[in-house]
Amino acid sequence: MHMNTFMEKQGVLAHWVDQFGDELYTWAFHKTRDESLAEDLIQDTFLVAFQSLEKFQQRSSPRTWLFSILNNKIIDYYRQQARHSTMSLEAQNDPSDSLFDEDDNWKKESRPAEWDLSHHHLLDDPEFGKIFYACMEHLPASWLSCLQLKYLEAKEGEEICQVLNISPSNFWQILHRAKLQMRVCLEKRWFSIQG
Amino acid sequence: MNKVMLSCKKATELMEKQHIVRLTQVERVQLFMHTRMCDACSRYAKQSEFIDKAFGQDASLEAGNKHVSPKILSRAIKDKIINNLENK
Image 1 (tube, each protein chain N blue to C red):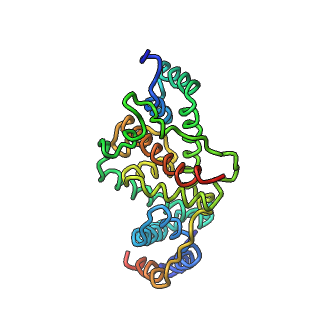
Image 2: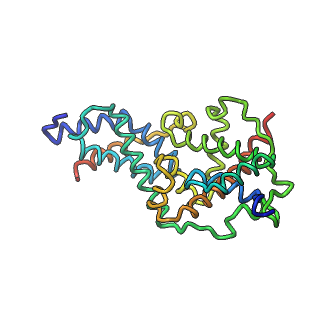
Image 3: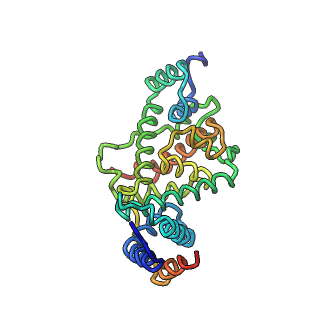
């Protein structure tokens, strides 16, 4: 794409802000739950787009391109968050204590119940989505940063550990605790109520 | 006995660990045996996979958008974003 003047470039960007701004903002807010942070991420996204417009060869759609820039911004944000927060593995954060007995086996009342997963479109059900999201929000912030990175980046575990500067064993322990807590929350708020 | 039979806590830990690093042969056998014999952990394993899928869906743009309530950027913010391009 040959952009001769600043005005031309700005014109293209202004058009994209109108066309894709809300959608990008919706996604940024969904991933961060913070309006002003989401706005900043959108601003940064368009700055990067503006600065590298020449490199955008229309190989992909502008929407796809802008979303990939935004996703990188979100990942950067969670990397910073994860680095600055101490990956707390202290005992008070460990759901295991209330779920397992002194032999580290399930306490009778916390044994996982059968979940009805036969409903094929459960993951497409917006009501379930809301509950899942609400359960995620209750996770400690540093765990959530780990999870966001794991699933947003689609990278191998060991690579994420390097990025976060934590040991693989810290990483899977965090994932384990997060999973235990999510499981309890989903059972309580969805599966024990349905059907 | 303890060397053969894992605790439920340990078994559920290994389920996460196997996604991050390769389990040793012994760990793999222990996990397999435990999950076969323990109903609660066998249910947990299925639920854990399901939760993984749900996390993956939440992180994926296309599918994720279904769950997301739409947000609108105000005109003022949009104008600010466009104007800020000038100053860089």
